[in-house]
Structures are given as structure tokens and as C-alpha cells.
Amino acid sequence: MKNYPFDVRQMELGVILETHNVQAGYGESQILRGVDITVPRGKVTTVMGRNGVGKTTLLRTVMGLVRTKDPIIFKREEIQNRSTCRRARRGVGYVPQGREIIPRLTVYENILIGTEARNDSVRTFDEDEIYGLFPVLRDFRNRLGGNLSGGQQQQLAIARALVGKPDLLILDEPTEGIQPSITIEIADVLNRLVAQGLTILLVEQKLDFARRLSDFYYIMDRGKMIKHDSKNNIDFDELKTYLSV
Ligand SMILES: Nc1ncnc2c1ncn2[C@@H]1O[C@H](COP(=O)(O)OP(=O)(O)OP(=O)(O)O)[C@@H](O)[C@H]1O
Ligand SMILES: [Mg+2]
Image 1 (cartoon, rainbow, N blue to C red):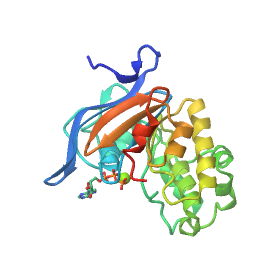
Image 2 (cartoon, rainbow, N blue to C red):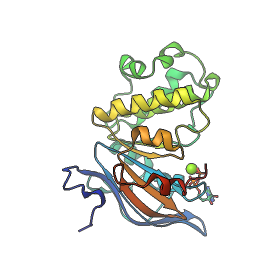
Image 3 (tube, rainbow, N blue to C red):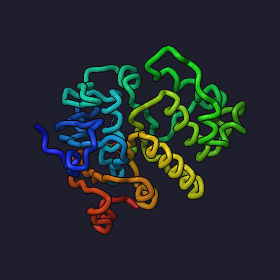
């Protein structure tokens, strides 16, 4: 039986995702050197660390875009041998670093793509619900995704992930290259979603944004988690020494 960090049992939180000594990389180059992470249900868990330590590689491994033989357990089932599509349909939503929206499709069409991750055959979404979260997307519904600002594209990428109805939303540096005013709006929306029961796994380098959201922190360095703590116990001065900025 795994010894959980953060007293998840004591707090009566379930665990939605955990990895056990996960190793992965690209060809001959090993990037993840035995990653253990526990993501409590209904909370925000944030992975921080310098450029190139393997944060994105970890998220891509959870999504099945980088392969591993080691256990990745999502909703009590080992998923490391499942396809990316199966993982998405089981309830993992992914907002990749750099957003990866499709520039030549409209905002509406970009969001619609996210419905492919639904666990049923419904391929529509509740426009009032999504545009209620991100009103700018209603205004720009028929614009091409490529004509949106960075912040608007980030909101679009989050909307696209949400229409797949995830239980766990994974976000990779959502503040990268976007204006501070929009990052605050995004944090507010994410906090509302967490209050409604969503779980978030966030990779972030900006501490002020991370602090608006996070319940638990992991510090990653050279392909490993070197420290983890809850928001009440973490030493933020020490954490800062592990950030690039
Ligand atoms: N497709 C790839 N093929 C080969 N090496 C890669 C590939 N993607 C990333 N790497 C290497 O893997 C290492 C970890 O990269 P990764 O993108 O996971 O880091 P990161 O922590 O997300 O960095 P950043 O903060 O800059 O986003 C780096 O040395 C990177 O050069
Ligand atoms: Mg990255």
C-alpha cells in the first residue's frame, strides 16, 4: 500500500491520479527518472520547476503521448497501456503548453473538437454554459481561432477541454505569454470549476498565479519530484529557488 503524501486519508479526500516510479523519455534520452505524484480529488495540485526538468513530459506521459511501462492509476484503473483517446474518454482533459488550437477553424469549431473526448456519443456542447465561463468566446464564436489573442486562445483551449466533460483537467503553463489581467480571469474561472467538483493538475512557473489556485505543490527537478507539500506548509522562499523566473 502506498504511503500517501498530504494525509489524503485524514482529509477524507480521494485520490484521482497517481503515478508510481514513472520513467519515460524520447528514444535514448531518459527524461522522467522515477516520478511519484498523487493528485487528490477535487483539489488543485501544481507541479513547479525550471525549464527543461520534464514537466511537460510528465503531462504527456499521463496523456499517453509519451509511453511508459510504469503504473499510472486514474480513477482506480491502470491506464499506462491505454490509448490517449481512451484516457480522454475516461475523464482526463488536457490543455497543452502552447494551447494548440487550430488557427483555421472558428472558435465554435475548435470547441466542438473537444466533444470527441466525451464518454458518450453526444457531439454538441452547452453553449450557454461554456460562454458563461468565457464570455469573449461567445462574441468571437465565428472568428478564426488564429485571429484571437494569446489569452483568448488560452480560454478557447480550456473551453475545448471542458466540453469533453473531464473529471481531471490538466493544464500546462496556461499563463505563458498572456496578459496578467487575463490570467486573473482564468484563475477565477478555474476556481469556480473546482468549487463545482473538478480536479486540476497544473504545471506552472508563475508563483502568483499558482498561489491563486493551488492546494498542493510538487517541486520537480531533473526528471524527479524532489519535494511536495500542502499550501499551508510549503516554504515559498525555498520553492522560488527552483523556478527559472
Ligand atoms: N520531442 C522531444 N524529443 C526529444 N527531447 C525532447 C522532446 N521534448 C522535450 N525534450 C527534452 O526533454 C527535456 C524535458 O522537456 P520538457 O518539455 O518536459 O520540460 P519542461 O519542464 O516542460 O520545460 P519548460 O518549462 O520549458 O516547458 C528537455 O531536455 C527537452 O529538450
Ligand atoms: Mg513544458
